[in-house]
Length: 230
Image 1 (tube, rainbow, N blue to C red):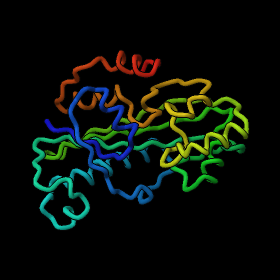
Image 2: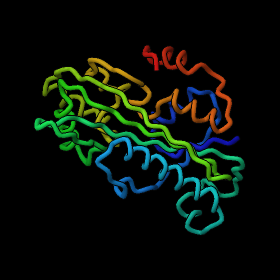
Image 3: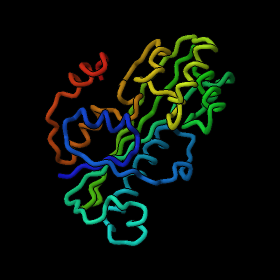
Image 4: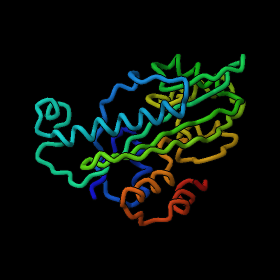
């Protein structure tokens, strides 16, 4: 069974490698702004499916000229049978009036500063959706992980120093919890890998549902790699 990760995220690639399964990365070119929802669970599930489906269709139609242009890495390769993994993450934080705000990826440093200021000294929710599509049969399975993350009351100077690292680029909520932003972490309830962008235990369970055998103990691997159980 061939495995494809439909994401350009370095961290998702790293996390998936912890399962000790061979896989290939084919980046999905799906426009994330084309799907909107006020329900974060529905949003990440829909986006994860859409990302996986775009790559699934590219694999199915490798000979199409447009596919060759967008995905030259598919040229001359055969992918049967194949499972495609898609994932998406959003952050949800409470506004002062009690309403919920969904945070995706920042457009620039100014928006990243706004997002991280909104998360400072608060508990926020992290939703990550994972979808797996069987290229041959069209069968798909989807799971959504929800975790709670609490940031400490970091200073404006600490925030400015963090922004200088540019780690916020292309990160939901403008941070990567296993990177420099780990210093902001006060408490975590749920899946660390879900917060990073690919809930590994849920992903492993879905892959097993689709017929793959996972050769590692996910909890032990995550604990050894991060110091956190997953």
